[in-house]
Image (cartoon, rainbow, N blue to C red; front, side, top):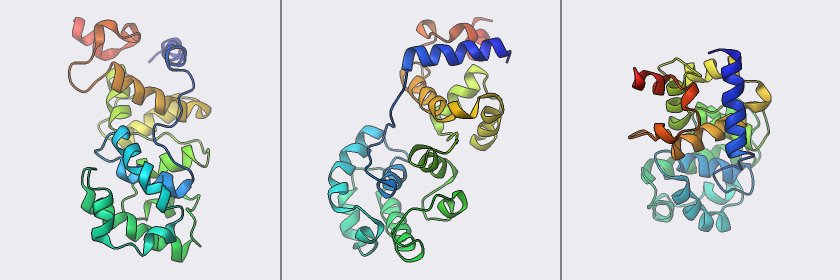
Length: 211
């Protein structure tokens, strides 16, 4: 992609979406970890409804570490894959309470070693709460970046590598949120709204449609 096209894409995204706030509600790093784990294959809207009640009870890892699995499953049962998520969150809470003095470590390797926390989730936590330069790649970012032509990769990890090579690091988290919002608003998985998309003149997918 030409530098001038990249600059235009960034400018248009910023003009249309501005300073987007995190899509998940949280009060601290542990609550963000809970929300991120719950968000896998579940809408942010649903997660925020669930955590609205959860966060009244779970402030720090030790609050959840001793929770009965069945009881916690009941609290998050409206979220997809609630059994695995409940198990992972309780186990992760035990580790955080015992090994990290009831805190969430600001360390990528430590985060991805926790049950239920993968590369994308760790990057979201580090980029959102700890303000590190991170570029989390979820399904929306993966789809949109590769459709537009910002990336040309077949995995989220390779897409992350492509994006971090061409996007200035101070824009990584902004671009992460812009691309997610764009994927929900215009560049949907099915029937993308190409004809009314403000990026269509720079988009590889749209150019291929026309030809």
